[in-house]
Length: 535
Image 1 (cartoon, helix red, strand yellow):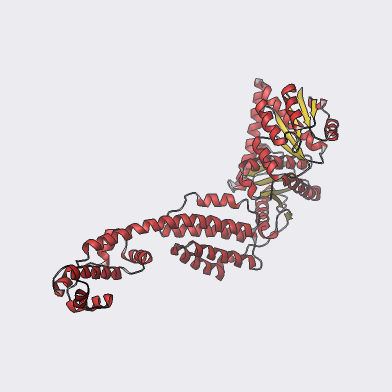
Image 2 (tube, helix red, strand yellow; image 1 turned 135 degrees about the vertical axis):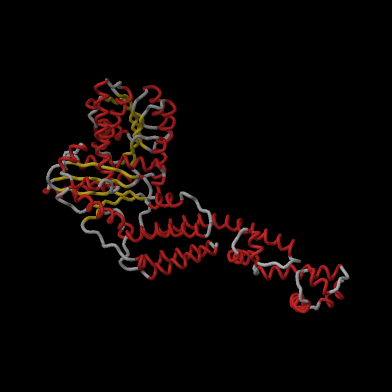
């Protein structure tokens, strides 16, 4: 029999929990209660309980300290936290500590009993050695679950689509479903919030969501299966025609319960979409498409709702003049190596799309992906290095953004942070050929030089070298070459007695009149005047 310790600074709460549960039926007994954290820790060490139910705020040690110290005393103890408040930071820390469950007051009998049953099963799995027959049974169940997940995953990823044309009985037999005549559809639950960027928070909410969906759907449908992909849960539903209204009501109830349970995580939101209903299993493909469009629509229509029916039609923003103008501006901005320009262009796209009537969530999602792709494609064209996994990281992070504005802000942040790093590296790369050119000119300015010769030495095309050189020095290559020659001529006029004609040839000119004209323009003095003044 599993031993349970209850800790709460309100004695009535301890008594309520004791009376709320049929402990004997769960093969558990309450061996001790405590009214503060210090007393609770003493009784943990004394009674060595298997399960501790504790309030998150208590005198002495609070719930988090009790978990930490209790785990140090016995790492196998399972903790259930109960709180009357949504203490976001406390909750997330508790999750990281490995707390088994987080239950909000007022305590519901079914929630507490269900959590205790799960923990009871967990202890059984730890201590019970399975016989060979039990192992075989467990293997069969695992194989059955794997086959069901395979079917649903293939449907979601549009693999083996021809399979849907087979009779439901044949599919059911092969993948261990018990389909019945009636209705088929796909529903999607989507969790959102930057708090889900933390894998522990996502794990915690995924477990909560699965438990709630299972509890609400069993007994109501002929058959169901759930596949989760990060913060998105896809449900395959098969139910009787007479259950349509009940299904909708129950899914709405699931959504409300998930939102309540997720309230302990700051800024978490949940949305549900019920795809189109079909009398045929093959109709689940269209049902999945409509459910996905509704989930994308939450970006403009809002989260926390149950969407159903025909979704808004896809827009045609990619063919619009606004998108064409954006593409041109974005490409030019990326070429500039100026982060502020890139940020300004993307901010303009955000403002334009959000103000545009009828923009759908699908368009918003499509455009942010398109912008990310455009950025990577342009950078590759400019031979500017970027992070190899940038698109993948963006898509993962974008999946947890709940609104169009938040999604665009995340896009702008992702691209500008990457661009700033890439531009810095590019400038460093560009400085190297400029240094090569300057060194080459210093060594060869006395010769007849051409841009083609110098660009070959730098390993760049003449056109690209001209752009890079002007951007880095503020002058064209020919202007720089002329300056180098004039500086050489000034030095020879000051330090030698060589004639102007000799100096003209020594710095790369073969026309004395042209040399004299250029020197006068550069210094404001004729060569002989310069010599008299400075030699």
